[in-house]
Image (cartoon, rainbow, N blue to C red; front, side, top):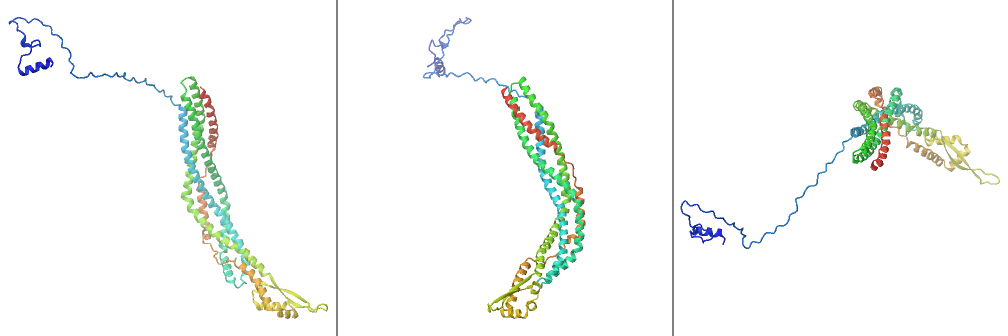
Length: 455
């Protein structure tokens, strides 16, 4: 038990402490008013708790000292290169807008040009109707002689006569309109061709700008990686010179393209607001006139064949006896022909014609052979050809075209809208110049890379 423990226990039990253990009661008190001589107190030895193992201290490594921070010195961006990149980005946006606008205006101008073509086609069809109608009037006169065609031929003749004045007037109006619209068509076609060509140039330039930007990035990264000094400055100076040289071309092409897009928008507004309302009636009229022209023209050839058939003769032959001393049983064949116009009149008319053209002896021989057989043979051959022609004769259709009555107003409205289209002089030379310049610049930038890496 330690001294501290023993003292605590004795004080608790009110027992005297053993002498020599710093018991205050065991010390004789000095007489009053006598100073107590100074007694040195021996140091108390540190006590170790029994059975407690001494803790093992593991040596700790010195605290980690962070490595000195390396300051990344950023190379300031080149103002020339930054401006060029900004201008290229703006041009790329403009190119995308132009390609979309250029394709749309190409489509719309094509629609307008086909409207002008419709006027030309209408004029051509009306001219054909006029000419074919004159020819058909004579040919239909022949068709009227055929009982099976008489009613249709007569009705079509009446239709042609009734439509003749309107066709004549419309043909004259369309002819004058065609002459006045051809120069406008040529102008629109020229502008449209410029737009189509420029779309292809813009697509090529867009690709070239991508390649140029990649080449510029490579050479700029190489320059940025060089240690600062005269060599780095020299390379950067060369890059800036190239950027300063190409940037004005980029800016010029962008400005010109923006103006061209504005011109396209003006054309688009004219077409969208006005032209579609006047073009559609023209195409409808074109379809109607073209349908009549085709049907009339399709009649010309078969009616001409019918006319030729009327002049054609169909023959038959029969044997008759022609004995001689050497050959008393000899037979010969006699051939005769009957015109188709007689065949159409019937069997009796054909028989009377046979009797007229044959001698009495031959007529008796024909009757012996079989006159009805001969007549049927002639009729069969003639009607076979007629049926082939008749199958191609479709005459039951109207000739009148209602739109011809207002054709003059339709043409005038269309021409007025055409003249309202703004047709500026499109100059895309700056875009083509930039494309040529860019292609050369790519080669120059790539040629700088090996020298930059050697530094």
